Image (cartoon, rainbow, N blue to C red):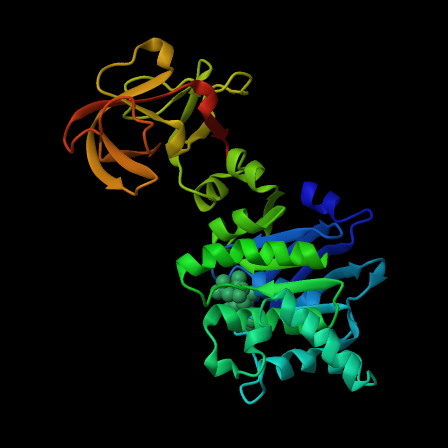
Amino acid sequence: MEAAAAGQGTGFLRVEGVSKRYGQTLAVDDISLSITKNEIFALLGSSGCGKSTLLRMIAGFETPSAGRIVLDGEDMTRVSPHHRPTNMMFQSYALFPHLTVRENVAFGLRQIRPALPRGTIDARVDALLDLVQLRPLATRKPSELSGGQQQRVALARSLAREPKLLLLDEPLSALDKKIRQRTQLELVELIRRVGVTCIMVTHDQEEAMAMADRIGIMSPHGTLLQVGAPGEVYEHPRTRYIAGFVGETNLFEGRFESGRLACPGLPQPLALPAGTATPEGTPAWLSVRPERITLHGSDPGEQAGNRIAGRVGGIAYLGSHSIIQVEIGGGRTVTTDHAAGALAQRTPATGEAVWVAWPPENGVVLTQ
Ligand SMILES: Nc1ncnc2c1ncn2[C@@H]1O[C@H](COP(=O)(O)OP(=O)(O)OP(=O)(O)O)[C@@H](O)[C@H]1O
Ligand SMILES: [Mg+2]
């Protein structure tokens, strides 16, 4: 309902009830979405959930089976890709291997402005190469560049067309993790400097959180589940699927009983955040993020909130933080995450008896 409402009104890009069917497959199912000017929006979802299909419909490479796409007040639904003020950067970059960096970028510009004099093209290409910091490599061929440099050429080529809307399909997937994290921030900085509205597709939730103003999370069946700022979807996921997809979480399953959540196998019903509606007997889940749980060598007492005794299972030391798994019986594990120096006592040893605890406000109650 909310997603449908978001599709109306005055968004710079409005996706209105868009679906795409391929034979029996409903790749995109009735998505409505509104994106504001200069926003960086990330579409996030598992492989095959319809992200690329939605992006390709916005770019014009696919025609929706139902719905409308409106950009800056104009209905684009049936407009061909090269008549739309959009530019899509494909996952494979699709650089021309026989052209130099400079020629690749100039190609994007010549496509939209065939009549531009040579000098003007050269000046604009120089400006774009400066923007992506590739001027010193202008005469190289794509095969003589690193993955990150190729990605910047593809980006400069896309920007050369001065799109109103930049569409990026898994822009950083070719890069290894370390370079990727740095490039994420560089790319955001660049997009902001150019001042272009951007929709990017990724299946990497950290990438979406690091780069986007807002994130749209898709279900594996092509529907849009939730749209919100990174902090919003992380702290207030609407469903179990989202809670598990955006970050790590601990899920406790049970039924409401006298204002608490009674979970089979746990000695005590779990206390819930104040104000939670708890219709007696209704099934529900409590999601508690690993970093919201503390670890204690002995019973921390009632004032600690929810507390469960267990034994230390796995310990992963990750430098800036440590992940400690606590086995709480019945084959269940609680995952806890501690910033370096945050453990009140020394790091416990595997097998040691411990308590996990969290205040009721640290949990999020989910009913679907
Ligand atoms: N041209 C096509 N013909 C038939 N089915 C298609 C076509 N393109 C995509 N599909 C199907 O539609 C669904 C969505 O595909 P899509 O490429 O949009 O997924 P995605 O979310 O981008 O996945 P990934 O993260 O793996 O890139 C998949 O089930 C896919 O097999
Ligand atoms: Mg895809």
